[in-house]
Length: 383
Image (cartoon, rainbow, N blue to C red; front, side):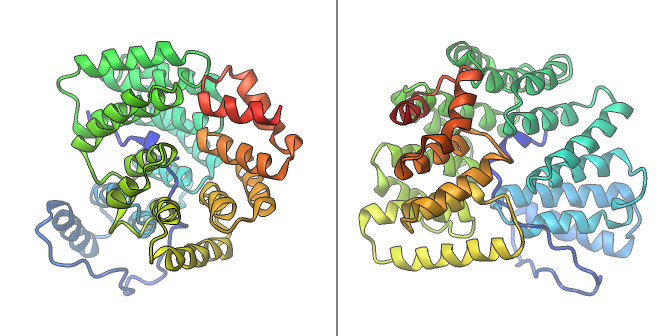
């Protein structure tokens, strides 16, 4: 079974508000003629749905294809296209399970976590053994820092999915909640024994191994797993962002530049490229700063909250506005509480000399017994 791996999505959270066309005659995008089987499939499904717009199974297939393409390309437009494909069922009182699940995924991407959890609860009430619903619910709880709830959502996956998926879900949560070394070893064992999981599931597990190794301070092992993940899919947006962060921490901006050149569409990847260019003093640095400034301004005009982490990093390290960066990081912490959400708030608080602003993060690290060498170092500077 191939699951739509929601654990990369909070990821990861590089999407803008869905655009919902109000007229079927509006041209969303002219897809270029391509030999890419994914694009060809998308074009065929879209033509079929235009001819028969009320066939649920066809609309769901198209929406799922848009979701996957939007994740792969980190292109926010595809989220809106997915919603548009399901428009006849989107707002009815009791949507079909397939619509509820896709709606929850899009709500998750938009940081509408409470509504997403409500839709997932509806799915699980009807189908208590729905693996995708449990996985997505686990991811949302983890993003919010509710680790016990996340673990409780992972446990039902044990009899419902393969060993790699269930182990990855549980290990990912436990690694943030006082069992980092044990979780790392458990996931290593699951990856080494796995011989049949689909590439996307393998990619998820190996990327998480790389991140766990980095949090534990095992840089050589982190590099090893990042390289393995690139061997599975060198174009995955979440992987490229996570590896770029690791390389920037390692003082290897030229590798980041080589890795990300040509991937300017996702805000998160352009941010990391520009951070590398700052160190390299490239000719394109100022142009990319201006582009990012415009993009974040557009996000604000849309009332968007999912790019706050990246905007805080931009304000702190590229605009050199520590006070503004701290305000954004605090706003972001109210919504999501992953590693980089904690990190940017701590870094901004350090530059402002404001321990009180970072106290919620410090309290969280203590309460959850978080084993993260860098976050502990940053918190120590404030304490």
